[in-house]
Amino acid sequence: MEATLTIGEFSRLTHLSVRMLRRYHESGLLEPAAVDPGSGYRYYTPDQIATAQVVRRLRELDVPVAAVRRVIATPDPTERSTLVADHLHHLEAELERTRAAVRSLRRLLAPAPPPVPVELRRVPPSTVAAVEADVALDDVLGWYAGAMAELDAVLGADAPDSAPPGGVYDNALFEDGTGHVLVHRSCPRPPTRGRVHPVELPGAELALTTHAGDHADIEVTYGELGTWVVENGLAVAGPVRETYVVGPRDTDDRDAWRTEIGWPVFAVAATDRPGP
Image 1 (tube, rainbow, N blue to C red):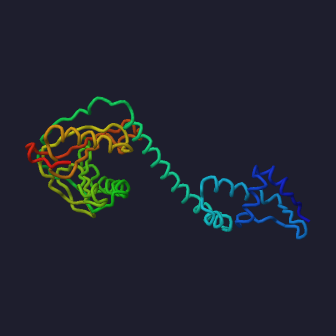
Image 2: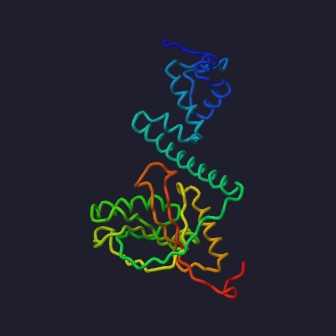
Image 3: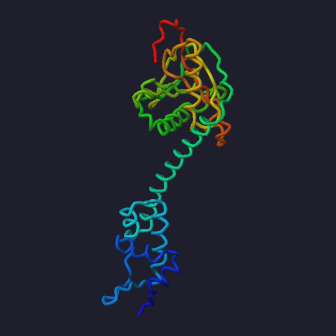
């Protein structure tokens, strides 16, 4: 006969309280090996210890009860690992969003820093190799990574290493949550292959500043640049441009990333500017 453990013994071995083990039983997450019909005492077997510990860790990670049941009931180890990995990816994404919000808030609530340096720069028209599409704001990072990888694969050695890649982001992306996005690299003779094709970027007068670090709090730099534009009697005249002077293609050190943000602008008279 297989050895059994009382619920108290099982509790001590798994570091799960008796109350929690009863809850796991009631929710169908961990059935005792046997329940005495007269006394109602629960008994467990040693081979249930690992299962109990898996359930505990999954619930600590806020894996839903239904998902925990699927993990425990799945006999295939590969499928079990896939189910757990999917939830871990979700948790990592949530953690990164939390970290980004914390970094933004710390920057916003810190003592007022000196104004960001802004310059006006005239950029001439240029022909670039580009990938473009209408993209949802929440999907921009993933879409950008795929588009830039395709640009790198198609251009290979044809694109000058000295010219950093860039992006053009339609105003509707920020206003409506979906808008036109274009990523590009300089190339003497842009090819047409797959999604990559030549695009003529128009010349513009840019109000330009540089965001330091990763993009977790880049909206703060956008706000500072926008404040400078308004205070200097300018108005935005087109989609924002970003240039990735130093980015993930160059280094894994996010603190070293440098992104130029440029808004095409034009001067307006005080009477032309709309009110709040």
